[in-house]
Length: 109
Length: 115
Image (tube, rainbow over all chains, first blue to last red; front, side):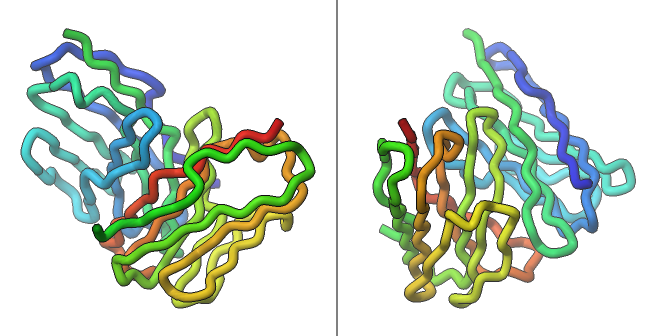
């Protein structure tokens, strides 16, 4: 079966750095997405990786290793507004997005 | 504003009733989706439409039926509502289906509560 694993919850301190991991097993691979979802709101797109390596976008970076079925989202200079759930999703060979359950990130002052 | 919109935002109803949720996108996208997000926060794909054709129909009960009058609209009709249907339903759209970089844009969600 297809599976996306990510930690359920993480806690970090304002101003610090946090890394959210995602491992996946899917039938085929056409890219990996990270979405941010604030409580009671819709998911919004953060990043996309299809080749191995690091993609940097401001305070957020996303890394992919296809051989290991592994990705991480790195958030730097954490702000209180970064408190949200972070969803990892993989596009399989049918171009269907398979979603993880999300990691709830709690930022403390 | 260009966006994905859906109505209503909240829907409270009795078991056994029939209800519809409407979705519209004015982004000019070819593909639209319906997702169910349960209390455990899993986003589960229910349906997707590409150019008015149903292309994915996951193993959802046939009480759920998507209806797409045109490329910009994908409505969700639910018959004989059950307690387990309580969830947040998200509509989404993306530029095209068979494309790797295919960011999905989500509507604000409809929180359905079945009593």
